[in-house]
Length: 180
Image 1 (spheres, one colour):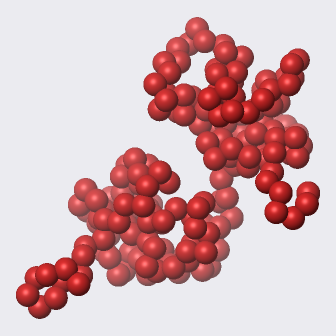
Image 2 (spheres, rainbow, N blue to C red):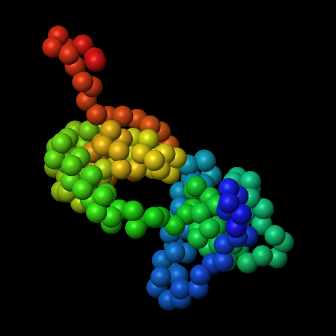
């Protein structure tokens, strides 16, 4: 692929993992697609076919599906290509790096083990998420920046997602209680 050219569905070849892994990827892609359709106000029920849902999703995303193309294969290609911000394979490798684990540990020690949005302090560590205030997908240069993280419970983090840049950290105050 030429440097600077955006990935398209046609650039991806859907790896054939087979078995449980392939089934997991299909379920994840469908779940993300249905979540997106629901967020757009489309009610999806059990009677709707994958064909109908995938066609509607492609229409809303402005992505063409070639006539006669296998729709589940198309969905898997979309998932693996990264061409859609809605349906894409997560980059879990990032979260297993030493640099990220050290930043996570720093944030929990610095801000405490309490959600900075709702104040929940009953979460166990695995349910506390270190959120990127400016989303990693749009600001990869800030992925390891201490000034771009905050502690959220899993529910507040899922609600925020990467749609906004809400900063729930406490504001710094001067000696007289005014914002700095």
